Length: 222
Image (cartoon, rainbow, N blue to C red; front, side):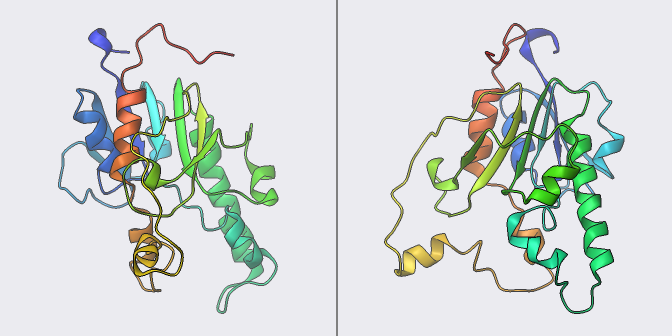
């Protein structure tokens, strides 16, 4: 870690800059990396495969939203009955590609790692090197953002997040409840995956505040 407690933070699979800006706001040297260019036009963004950047001497790696369609439980059905226009071979190849990316990040030579990902199915778990269950599952509304989206956090040498501003969910069936569910209700289209991958300001702020103030002597208790 740099002198004075400044960390070099790499935020992978993020084009929006939400998590990067949260860490930068409290003084850290934070960079984002994605196959897409930065949405905010920053010069603190790397366009490319994050695996090429993992050996860069980072103190903390936050993988904001790795491609998870083939890893998560909701997509396991496609491994036995592929969608129209796709083959089983392609589905299993995509699964291997997603698991390889997750494994590379999870086992990166970086002291502290967080990977955000939904609950995985058994085939994905079997392909990930040194797989461990997520340390916790959080909701955006625990951190002040009115959305439903269960978010699993896989943590290495980081403590679980503590909720910061818990909201009261609206009653099911109401217009407000439907608004809170808009991530899941997003209609199909070319931008659906891109928009669903956006991170939440409240969780990003909690990560920066709680993980960005760790000093050189800190370590997770065994």
